[in-house]
Structures are given as structure tokens and as C-alpha cells.
Amino acid sequence: MMRALWTAASGMTGQQFNIDTISNNLSNVNTTGFKKTRADFEDLIYQTSRIAGTPATELTTIPTGIQVGHGVKVAATQKEFTQGALQNTGNVGDMAITGEGFFRVLLLDGTYGYSRDGSFKIDSDGQFVNSNGHRLMPEIILPENFVRESVAISQDGRVTVKVAGNDNPIDVAQMELYRFVNPAGLQSIGQNNYKVTNGSGNAIGGRPGFDGMGQIQEKFIEMSNVSVVTEMVNMIVAQRAYELNSKAIQTSDTMLGIANNLKR
Image (tube, rainbow, N blue to C red; front, side, top):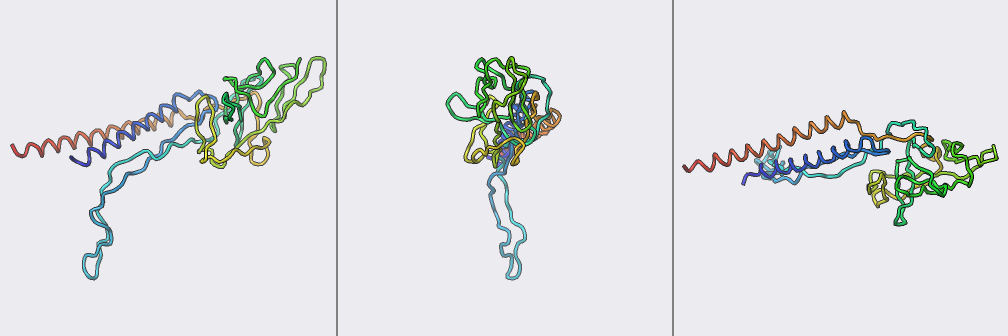
């Protein structure tokens, strides 16, 4: 069987995975805080027929060897944590991070999730929760009889609010953000959340605006960092590469057919 058949087949498999990744990026173009994924590829092992430097004569060596590759495989998928555009919503509870950092939420299984999605709501207990009911950590619990429109969050994460009958705002919480040595090593678990892995390192907490942390922008949300134009160009490139690999399979099949018909 011709080696080119399997080599081109690996190319088609790789480009199919590339299209899957691009499609996921495009489907999340309006997802708050979403970070696009890039597929990385690497070549497979090589069959070596002659090693470079093999002696040709007593005085000379062969300058180049003879190698043929066996195709491609997916090496990694990497999240690109570039800043997304900010959108002014005017909603109390909406927050965006400008710079480095993640919000921490308490998941239903008792573990922590980390997210760039700052579209928080205030539940019936006066706590800040996300769309799935996961509480923002450290907890922000507003006092009874608070005036909703008076809730304010400073760039350094101080949460203040007024209560009915008192015109002076009171401090209720100090927010924290969390960053990682290698955020690309975080595990995506859906619902706009990530989990810590050995690759990401442990979460490093800090006050917004200090020690390398980003700042909080209240009544804003961070949009997806997916560029539709860029993803469409990447899709065209992947599609053409898929077609070229399919042509290579067809050509290999034609050559095998010619060889098979030589005996006739």
C-alpha cells in the first residue's frame, strides 16, 4: 500500500480537527468572557533510508540524508487569553476585568471554578452569583434593605452600598482576582468556567489593580476575543488543506490503479 494514502489521511483527520476547533470559536463569538482556542500540529515520525553524514569515500561524507515523513497529528489546543472588547451594559452586578485575572466561583461540587465572565446577578439572599447560581468568592453579601442602584464596585474591588434611610455608603466586601503562571494550562469545563490543573499551577490571589492583577470595570462585560474575520480565513485555509489531502489520496489511488493494470 502506498505510504501517501496514510499520510494524506492523517492530514484530513488533522484538518477536520482544525475545523472543529474553528467552529467552536465561531459558535461562541457572543459568549461573555470566551477565549478562542488554537489547534497546534506536529509532524509524525520519519522513515530514514540514509543518514546525513554517512561516509561516501575515505575523505568525504554524504551531506544530506533521505527521509520521508508519515503525516501530521494534533499536538495541543491552546487558549489565547487576549483581552476581549468591553461592552457597557449599565446593569448592577456586571463586571469586566481589564488586564490579567479571573473571577473565582464556588461550583456545586464544592470546588472552585475560574472565569472571565463577569455577568453576575444579585440573588434573593443578596449574594452575587453567576447565571448558573454559582456564588462569587470571596462572598459578597449585601445588607438587608440595600438600595439596588447604589451598589458600586471600584476598580480595586471595593464593594459599597447604601441602605434605606442612610445616605452614607457602607463597605460590604473586598473583591479578589486570581491569576496563574500558565493560564493556557487551565481545563475548560463549560459554563464559562475553568479548573486548575498541574499545568496551570495554583491560583494566585490578589487585590484588583495590585501585584499584576487587572482592574474591575463595573457595569461592563468582557466580550469574546474571537475575530469572525480571522476565523473565517482560518476556516478557508483548513478547507483548502483538507481538499488537497483528499486530492493526494485520489492521486495515490490512481497510481495504484495504473500499477495494478500493468499486468493486463
